[in-house]
Image: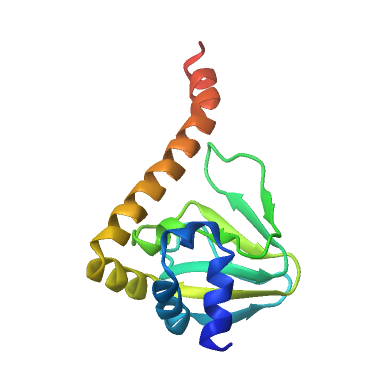
Length: 152
């Protein structure tokens, strides 16, 4: 994948709209195109991913693990980002991602993203804001479950 092609993939990814064109090119250059056959695990719950995958083509099933696990969901839209928080946090993720068709992704390494963030304070602020928004939506979605568990 050429650098311009990789930057184009990132342009379609919601999370990376916080980046300007030059930042997208730099991340595209650091990115790595990867292929997964049907049934391949992209990463499993409990693993610490080294970055995020951006779906180029194919279908990926996401399944949360643990007692609060909801229904699995499917990512099919090119530009879908698999675990954007892995770009910042080196913590185990609670979700298993598996290819349910042959897939192509662009892997963006955490170290490349963090290097770019350290060099660009404005990008760091935008990244923090985006992750706060995403976590807020996630917590809001979990509120009915929390209420049920409390028995209210």
